[in-house]
Image (cartoon, rainbow, N blue to C red; front, side, top):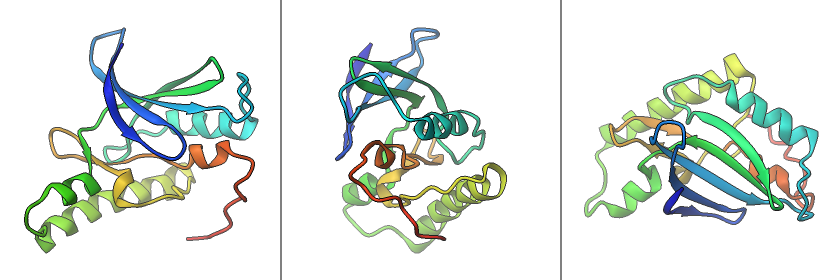
Length: 159
């Protein structure tokens, strides 16, 4: 069951919900499929499969995905806030050591994705670096949404 909207972007919305299995909080990203049908490309299916296999403390855990009523629903670990949200909420600038600690954790997640999973994040920014209630840093949003639109050119930037 959806509790509330926790995020909104150009490709879709993210809701906080409770898992039917155990009642734990999860995030549900809802993305409209381009043609309004229940079809997703093999490329997106492969990427979702890769994301479900990711197991790292600095990467948001993806649980599963569903297609319903012309929308792709992605169930994942629920985090409290983005790094961008923290920066906006602070009355004073963050200390350099605090910023360095968040960056170090995000880089650990990126290293795992690149070296172990052979995945490229494609959209690293403060809004995609999330924090749990325990202060853990997690990378999220691996560009699945960007692949959803055929109007977007394939990304060719190499990092």
